[in-house]
Image 1 (cartoon, rainbow, N blue to C red):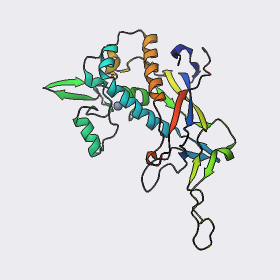
Image 2 (spheres, rainbow, N blue to C red):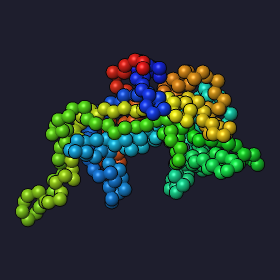
Image 3 (cartoon, protein in one colour):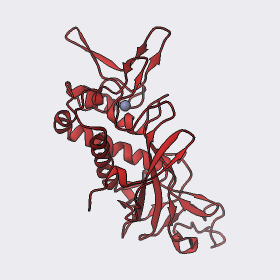
Image 4 (cartoon, rainbow, N blue to C red):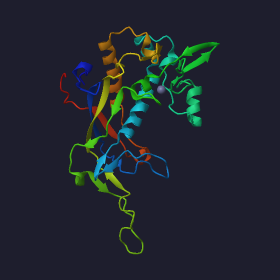
Length: 292
Ligand SMILES: [Zn+2]
């Protein structure tokens, strides 16, 4: 596919924000489906890929964001060396993604111990005198890691990122064609559908297309700019961009390239992988118009 340039993305200015829009199309794969459920399954704790708003199946932003975050983590883990030289980063650790939770599972602790993820999660604490950013001690020296690249895009606790994701809606609005009820439990006594079990198996059929937008915040009211490292009171939050030699336009296109590659790698949505559902194709919607 033709490379997308940041300056060609549609944009708008609202309330001090300058925003660029990246249109996305998600197609449910053949032989797969998307399970419609509540925001979270109370038994498994798994989030369904989809829920319904006014009878229309919707892929919630949170579902997409979760999938995008895992792809971005993988991207930075797999391309550490390449990105280290591209962005002129002194210390590999600075480019490693964080696990954005204080309560880590055993498996996650293992990922940190094996050096795949960084030790600290991304948060900053601001005191009267100083701003504390994530750092580690190694051989008696302190390495300031700053906010990880994934949180730069998607945000960390108390610090928003440069990417905003909206819900995705089906392109065809004829909902009756989209939703299929599959798992109606038959009441053994009355031989009819057991009450309360009728909607449990609603799915979105293969081939259904969803569309939506990802917003890239080019400039925030406080002056932060996409592609540049953020500074608060002289302290750099994004150490991974601090020594980058690229001009701002080139940086933005590099970051956009990373984002697009991660978006196109989203092939599963929701927590129903074992049932063969949730397989999707995610792509950039071609109808990108030019310039503001
Ligand atoms: Zn992080």
